[in-house]
Image (cartoon, rainbow, N blue to C red; front, side, top):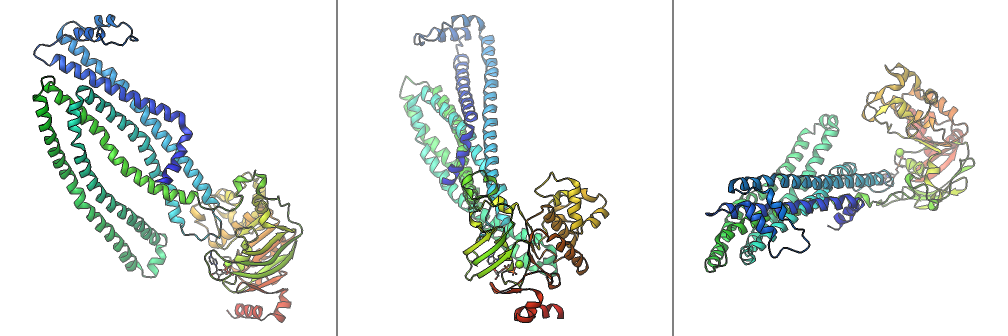
Length: 615
Ligand code: ADP
Ligand code: MG
C-alpha cells in the first residue's frame, strides 16, 4: 500500500481540481440532504388524514421560534406557495426537479474532475516510467523482461488510475452520501437509529468473511493469468519456430496446464461467490428483523415516537447503506491498485545509467568530451556481467591512435562485443579504465560521448516510418541530399530508388518488407550520416552476401578516413586490411598486429583463418 500512496502523491499536483471536485461532492450531498427533507415534509404533511396546505407548512417553517437570527425574514416566500392542498403538494413535488438538476450537475462536475485528475496522474506516471525504461543500464541483469515491462507500463498504470479515480470518486462522494443520510436518521430519532445500527457488525462480519476467500482466490488467478499471457505470447511471437520444431503439442500442453490452474482457482472462488449473496441476504434479514423487534418494543412502549418515524429511519439508513456499499468494492480496487503500484514503482525506481540524456543541463554530470582526435585507450580493463560468475573480459590493455581502423576477431563468446560496448559506455568496466583522448569515460558527460559515435550491430534495428526517417533517426531535420549521400556510401541508394516510393517508402514494424542485408545497409547509412568520430560495427555485415560485403568493405575503407573505427567482422576477409587486428580469446587480448604479422606468429589467428577458408 505504501507504493500506492507514494504514487498517489502525483495527484497533489492537481490540488485546484481536487478542491473543486470536493466542493462539488459536498454540494451534491447537501442537495440530497435537502431533497430528502423536502420529501419527508411532503409525505408527513400531505399523506395524512388531515393534510396541511403547503403554504401553512412553509409559514410555520419560516416563522419557527427556533429560526436562527442570521436568516433573513422569509415570510414573503409564503405567497409563492399555493394555498390549496393539491396545488401545494404538486408545487412542492415539482420543486424537487431543479434541486435534483443542481445535484446532478454537481455530481457530474465531481466525477469528471476526479477522472481528469486520475487520468492526468497516470499519464505523468507513464511518462516517468518510460523515461526510466529508456535509460535502463545496458548491462543490468534483466529480471523484469521486456513483456513484463510493457505490461507494467500499460496495464498496471491504468489499473493504478482506476484506483486513483475510485479513491477520489467513489470514496469521497459515497461516504459523504452515507454521512448525510446517517445524519437524517439521527435527526429523525437517534435512539431508533442506534438500535438499527446494532445490526451492522453482524452484517459487516459476514461480508468480510466471504470477501476474504473470494479475494484470495482472485489474487492467485490473476497471477496465473499473467503466466497464461506469457505462455501464449511466447509461442505466438515465433510461430514458425514452434511449427518447424513440431512443438505445438508441447506448447498446447503448457498452455492447458496453466489454463487448468486458472480454472481450479476460479472454481475455489466459485462456492464462496455463489454462496455470498444468499447468505449475506439471509443474515442481513435476520439481523434486521432482530433489531426491528427491539425497535418495535421501544416505539410502542413510548408515546413520544411516531410509528412512521421507524419507516423514515429505515429509509434513511437504507439509502446510507446503499451509498456506502460500493465502498466495499473500493477496498478491492485499492488492493488491486496497490499491487499494480508495487509493480510500477519497481520500474520507476529502477536504476538508470548515470547522467542520462534528459539530464544534460546539470553541470555536475561530468566533463564535456570534445571531438575525439587523439586516442582510444583500454587500461587493464576487466568486466564481469552482473550476476555472472566469471569475467567476460580480463586484463585488456589496448591503445588505438586516432584514425586507426581496428578489427576485433575471436571465436563466439570470446568477449568481442563486450569490449566494444565499453566505448559508448553502454557498460562500464568492473576494473580498469577506458579513456578517449586521455579522459576517463566514467567522468564524461554521456551525451558528449555518444554524440560523436555511431554503432551498427548485428540486429538491424529499424523503426516504423519512412526509409528517410530511419536513416535520419534521432536527427529528423536532416536535409534530403545528406540522407542520400549516406545511403550511397552504404550501398543502399540503389535498392532504395528501386522501391516504389523511394526514400519515402514506409517500413512496417521493425523494418519488415526488406531483406536482412538491405536492413543492415540502412543501419550503416544511419551510422554514416552522423559523421561519427568513432564508428563501431559489431558484425554489421553478417547479413550481407559476400559480393555486396566486398563493396561495402570498400565503402567502409573510404569511411575510415578521419575517424577511429572498431569492427567485429563476420568474415575475416573483410578485416584483413584493418590495422591493428586484435585477437580475443576467452576474455583476454591475445595479440594484435597486421594480418601478415598475426598469420606468422599467432596460433589462434591461424586457426581462425584456417577454419574460415576450409568452411
Ligand atoms: P562475442 O561478441 O565475442 O561473441 P560476447 O562479448 O557477447 O562475445 O560475450 C562474452 C562472454 O560474456 C560470453 O561468455 C557470454 O556468455 C558472456 N555474456 C554476454 N552477454 C552477457 C550478459 N548480458 N550477461 C551475462 N553474460 C554475458
Ligand atoms: Mg558478439
